[in-house]
Figure (cartoon, rainbow, N blue to C red):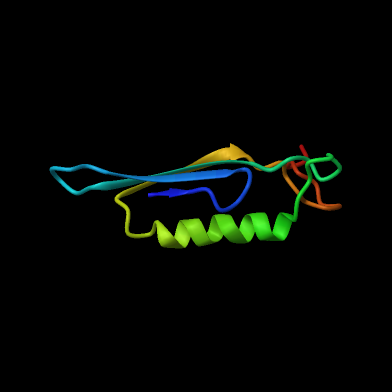
Length: 80
């Protein structure tokens, strides 16, 4: 199974043929907001959440990538 429905997100579910264990691997790239490749951030995160829910039956879930923190005026670090 693979997911190519959303640009910037690749999700695969790998199944072991003998044990039927499943591993979900999702990688993503969200371009910076002011980039010419910027996209609808809410739809991006909604799609990631949908993938996480659909992978909930998997034995192992890996999700990583470059999420380009969108924190608005909030600090993206812990002061001191």
